[in-house]
Length: 221
Image (cartoon, rainbow, N blue to C red; front, side, top):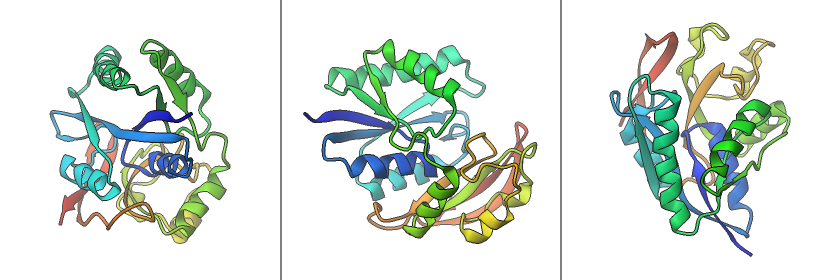
């Protein structure tokens, strides 16, 4: 029996790894990528990537994109209401599952389960429990390309913003930082890989401090 699913899509490597893992399964049909954007900035929430690049990314992946808009400084209630509208849209179309790229944070997974239950949906976690050091090295070895777009300076130096993740990047990471940034140390944007039809083209803009995070701006090329 085939499962119909949508992907909780941040544009970053963990959601990309989850999508890649799901696409290898013959019993899951992906209907769309669902992404939260902050309307005041017209960018992916938390990651700070411009909408235009997100749309190009979805096009290169050959998948429909559903954009969920929230306001700057949105409350959790606003997020849940707007995301819930998206969930209900797809539930009415027969979707029964949502794919997440979570790795090991139990509290986040428990929160997602509660939210999904309100909409009669189940969560799929295809990379849950994977060793993050091994996972990111496999990601690089398979020729996925991703760039760091957001850094939490309380956990990682700002100089890592704007860097492409490769072996040198991993060698430079402090031992206290998870190599997949699962504890919020950094966020990424994937611009190429084996599941992409062609690369997403961009140039690297300035790095700015906003709301206590450093964001490396990517400019559509």
